[in-house]
Length: 98
Image (cartoon, rainbow, N blue to C red; front, side):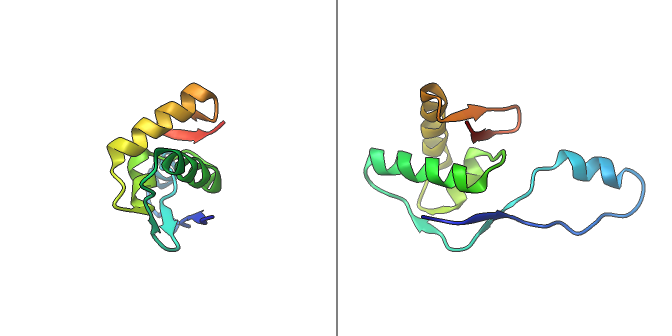
């Protein structure tokens, strides 16, 4: 459906560079923004697919940016539903596939 790939960051130099890099999750690269479905079932399917394609921990806001006209609050609600159904898991930093 869609491809999301982590961005490779440039190596940082100086004191604390390794510590700062280790705590930061990679950003998403949008190959192309996908249309946000109107139907709830299709929205849920699209969010689940995007989450699985990313494969790591991602925030609702980052996933929302992957779609045209998607609101982060709506994506957050869908992610919470996916967690309740066992299709995703909540972490301190965001959401990940189950």
